[in-house]
Image (spheres, rainbow, N blue to C red):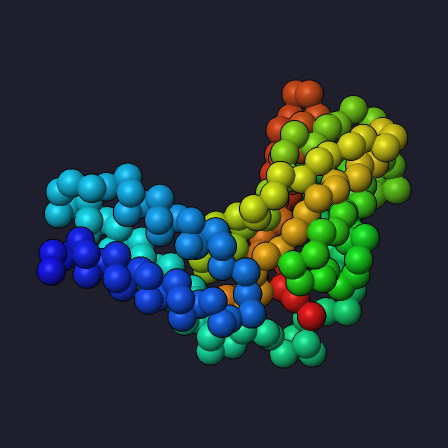
Length: 196
Ligand SMILES: [Cu+2]
């Protein structure tokens, strides 16, 4: 049996093992398959795949150990606020379903204000992108949120969905907004724990 076959078998077993888990692992399965198909030649590539498969398996194992976090570890109110990284903007956000539901689509109401006067909304600012990343697993969401400007400084971000959860850092998502004030671009990030 070639090493490649063994790798495939290992992947298949891993994926099967994960079928019984509560979390939605479709993305990991796809990745594993894509990698295998894309690298039919060379042990070097196979090593890369193996590494990737291991990382993936780590995620799955983690979920098996603690698929659902202790609900009391998730705040009842997951709205947040703070300055962007370079202090150019002050952001507040509130999830439409609060706390954020697991594997369900939700929206965010976002307000962008003057950094020195939070009661004053930013007149000319746009949100250029919204992402949410899971640092422990090095992936983002499987959906592309839609950003709508409601009024100056006020936005609705629809189509957010957290497809994985976990305890502690394993279940941490980082919300990331790219704010564009014309002459200033700045990032706003905020940790969100998933999910009750
Ligand atoms: Cu994840």
